[in-house]
Image (spheres, rainbow, N blue to C red):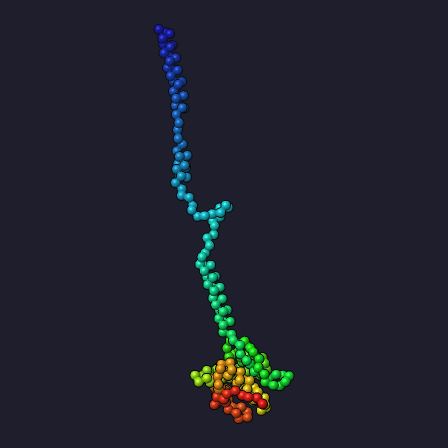
Amino acid sequence: MKKRHIAACLAVLTSLALIPGCSSGRETKDPEVTEKQETTDTTEPDETPTDEDGVQDDVPDDSQNGDASATETEEQDDGQSTEADQRSVTVYYVDDLSGVVVGKAAEIRDEFDIWNVLKYSGILTEECELLSIKLNDDQTMDLDFNRATAERINSMGTTGETEIIGCIVNTYLEAYDCTGIRLLEEGEDFVSSHGAVFDKYPGRIEFK
């Protein structure tokens, strides 16, 4: 009887010893690890292109390139227009060595360029200014200059006066293919110191 009681106690102790072993063999999941994995998997990748250093690549701005191209085209057009406007004319002046009226070719764009060549050639002074020219339908023209130009002409003797007027008249008549010219002093008919009036559109002046 006593032996049976001891055997029963040993059997109970053996069963209790086996229970922790079974419990330790079961696998458990860490809820924190699972949550982190799920969060990582649902993150959308950044589609912005980057270089090897992780810096976002610059995307070229086509609008800036277009503006630069348009500017270059406009500059080329302006250059071509300037060259197309230039033409060669004969400008008359008094040669310093011979004292004779001669002509030379000059590249000009407008009537003011011609006037500047006359200044450079010594026919006119820096104070002389061209105010305007008017081309008429009958191949005549009106040329208006300032008072300083009139004073320059009238400061000369008869020969000098004729030379200056002749250089102005002949240069502009040929440049604009006109047959007659009217000279004005600030809007009024010019009268030289010798009484000559150029209101009837005279033609070229011949030098003796």
